[in-house]
Structures are given as C-alpha cells and as structure tokens.
Length: 267
Image 1 (tube, rainbow, N blue to C red):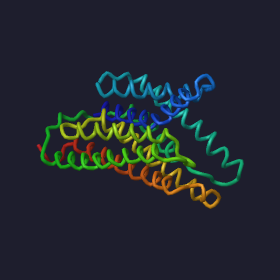
Image 2 (cartoon, one colour):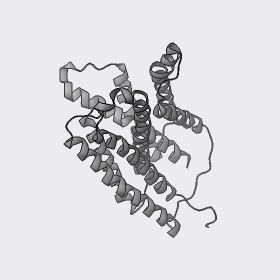
Image 3 (tube, rainbow, N blue to C red):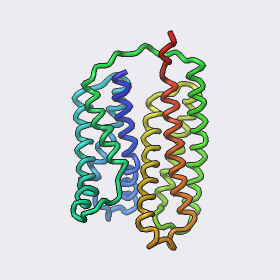
Image 4 (cartoon, rainbow, N blue to C red):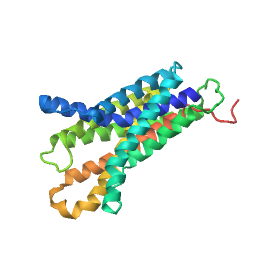
C-alpha cells in the first residue's frame, strides 16, 4: 500500500508538470534556433521525466527510496523557488497580495506529504477482489470520463476553428487533445480494472485544468474591465470548458480510485 501511494503521488506530480513540459517543447519546435532554453526549462523537463520514471518503478514495486526522496525534495525546492520569484517576492515589493498560484502551492504541499510518507510504516493490504460495490464506482468513473472525453474534444475544436483569441493559443487545443487521450484510457481501463498508471496522470492533468481556470478567473476579474472588449464569447467558453474538464477529470479519477479499494466490512 505504501509503495502504491508513493508511486501515485509521483505520477500525479509528474502529470501536473506535463503541460509546462509540453509547452516548452512546443515553443522550442515552433521557434527553432531562436528559442533559448534556460535552467528552468531543463529543471522542468528533468523533474517531469524523473517523476514519471521513478513513479512507475515504485508502482511496479521496484522503488529506490533514496532516489524517490531526492526527486521529491528537488521538486519541492524548485516549486518553492518559483513561488518565491513569481508570487511572494512581488507581493512583498508591491505591498499587496496578487494572483494566487493554487497549482504550485497545492502541489508543493503534496510533494512534502510524499516526502513524509516515505518514512511512515503502513501495513500492506491483501489483493482486492472485484465486487458489485466496486463495479458501481467504476461505472461512475467511466461515465464522467466519457463526458470529459467529449468536452475535451469540443475544446480542441473551438480553439482550432477560432480566428483570434486574447489568451488562448493553438497549444490549448493540443492540451485538449492530450486530455481526451487520458479520458479515453480511463474509459477503456475503467471497464476492466482501473489502476494508478491511469488514475494518477488523469487526476494530475485534471487538477492542472481546474487550477488554470482559477488562475484565469482571478486574472479576468482583475483586468477584465480593461480588456473586456478584446475577449470574445469563444474565449469565455474556453475558460468555462477548462473548469468543466478539470472537474469531470477529478471526479472520474477519484471514482476509479475508490473502485480499487475494499469495503472495510467485507471479508
């Protein structure tokens, strides 16, 4: 059980970094030789790969405690530095609270919990046998995943068919397609036996979509009156769809996670 939770946390954190990881690669491919990578880029790429690689090893029970510890600590230090540079230091200089980066704050907390959890001894649970109770949760998770699949495709279509946006870029469409792929995996595996290899990335990406909506909502409230004329209906729709996708993905992944558990009063 301990290894399953640790592996899940690492895959979750890796998935929350996938959009930034993909964004860097997209900009690199788009700008070619004009793109200048910096240490933040390399840190993001390295941490994403390491979290996924060692998260998968941990779920396969081939974990290396020291490696997991160093990766989670490195992730925590990196997130702390970014939060300080982009959020806390500007707040101090300006003398007022600005936009809140919920994504980095929460993932930093999760990473610290992951570090502590490495040193907590928990009893291993017996293999779970499928029951009707679990089947109901699987069906609920699949139901939300199917809706999320449709909404993600809708987001991609709106972005790719749109002409001009203020915040939105074609990359948002690619993120929608990527999210649709993970929803599809959740549907396929949810019908049989959901596992952390699917639920952890889905939860991480869904969390990212949800917190991105929170960020955009704060931004629009702050400067909406100044640029309101430049934000069209399609862009408002996209912001709403990100909230819906994030919410659907969180529900789908949580229901599928519950479906892997065993009721306490069952033998």
